[in-house]
Amino acid sequence: MNNSMLKIGDFEIGKDQIYFVVEEGQANLGNFDKAIKMIEVAAETGANAIEFQLAIASDFYVKSHDGFKIYSQREFSSKKLFQLVNKAKEKKIDLIVAPFSSKLIDTMTMYDCAAFNINASDLNNPDILDAVSDSGKPFFLSLLLANEKEIEWAIQRISRRKSPKFGLLLGQHTMASGGEGVSLEHTNFGYIKTLKEQFNVPVGFIDHSSFIWMPACAVTAGADIITKHLALSRDEKGPDWQVCLEPDEMKQAVEWVRKAKISISNTNKTLAPGENMDKSVMRRSIVAARQINKGSKVEREDIVFKRPGTGIPPDQYLDILGKTAIINIQPDDLLNINDLN
Image 1 (cartoon, rainbow, N blue to C red):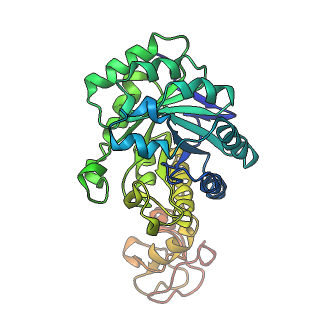
Image 2: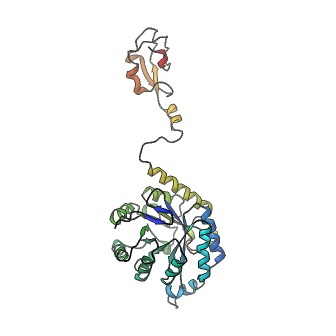
Image 3: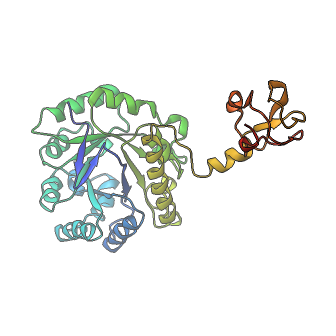
């Protein structure tokens, strides 16, 4: 494969900026007005996209399972799905669909969603893999829960389809076991580089931690894409509420991600704003170790190096030696090039 760039709309993932996806994560619980509100709030955070998990219950769960009833209540009509896409376009934020039903893929393609994300639970599902790959839309393949053999199987299947344009999303999902999400040492960030080298596609990170700063850490590890759960309020205790960020926190996470990308993109040594001021405080200057009389030549024993750093830098001392003082220089005076000839 040679698909190190992935274009979604006008955005080229894998180039200069991070593609930040806000995961709605079914926070709406079937309330369409809340789904619309989530789009509006996500757009205000500065994110590039919002992801909705969409399902047709009868394609997702057997009818005897409790999940069938739950997801039956979360289904949106075809008209409302169309309205979701249009609302996202109005707010200038991409709408990404994680389809839990292969029947929804043609519908959302027709409605012109920006992209798909194959949920980690469907990484081994041929129907979803094939339908998304054949949609013509760019997409992500989520690798949570998967071992390397399963990942290779899925990518091989995808690669045999028409012209798949995709990226990979590393991550972990531990919510079923309780707790507050994934801790830093279990994020497996080093595998981002491995995936890029092995498959030559953009690689991102799905953050299921409770930390605002974790997405920025993923960027420094090489992630091209970040996805993070949003909740209007964690007090509602909706799906995955333990790892959700509230709107102001999400905005901060997006800002930190952008700044982290700027940092790792600059491969030259540059001074931060304010460092020159600190340099004058922390560095040393060439100082008279003893009185240097007018007409005397400066010798090595005549000088020492002390703070502040507002005078002649110590690394220029060889330029000073042998010069003649044109005034009397007192002990502990900073040497001035204008006082030497």
